[in-house]
Image (cartoon, rainbow, N blue to C red; front, side, top):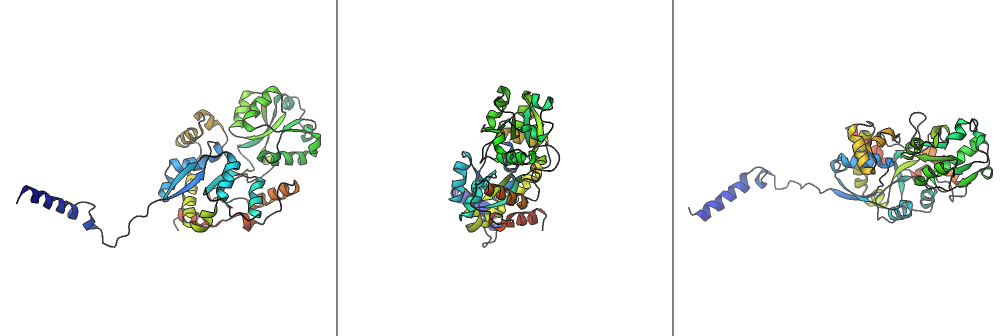
Length: 340
């Protein structure tokens, strides 16, 4: 046998009998399906922690997905993108615009919890007030807000809480001064005395309190108990043409939520710190937004929000639950995660 024929024979033997060779697999064995790619909008904030953890721990990959992160400038870019199908998943905060679009026929639906107000415990969202006002007793009664400067802008998430605070205090909107202050500017606004009270979320609650000019006055659960402020939303592709990809995403997401709900483990803190750019010590010190393992949302709370928005002239009409909420994806995911 020549050298050339010996090499050829050796290669043939290797192909036919080597580990993992084609000879070992039946001719009709199906090829593994390549992972599906979905596009999701994310932001480097605490409220996206379950998604960052799911991605870092391989939950989406295990579910058979490649997740492409898209960075967008809030609702002004993200909402049109998901309505038009250029984005598959939007993780956001409740706003009137979502209900207006659904009411006008947009094929988008809320599909899972991303953050809500719990009736007790650490407050991810809260009302902060200038320290001297609280320490002087000026805010011992809620109607002490009369005449004060409150951070508030009608279409912002925080205005829902501010509006309920006014109603609870028996104070009319015209009896306070409402000032629009972006979240990142609230620390300086308290420092300079530009505002007296503001509703905000972590990590700004901890940052502002640490700066010393304001204190935690009222946790959100004393003003808007059970409020469903954050959600996962699907666009047309996952709702219509590729529901399987939507189901896979939800399995991965709820796996991430379960890891997230293990609390401030060293691993979770490190993942959140890397994703948000925050110091690990600050991440550990903040209150994390509650997210239900099941993914269920409080639809009654969202209907109450709609009623408020309608009365404020912010939405066209109040739409029924079945038009804004699709529970089928979390139902499937929970069956999978229970091993059923």
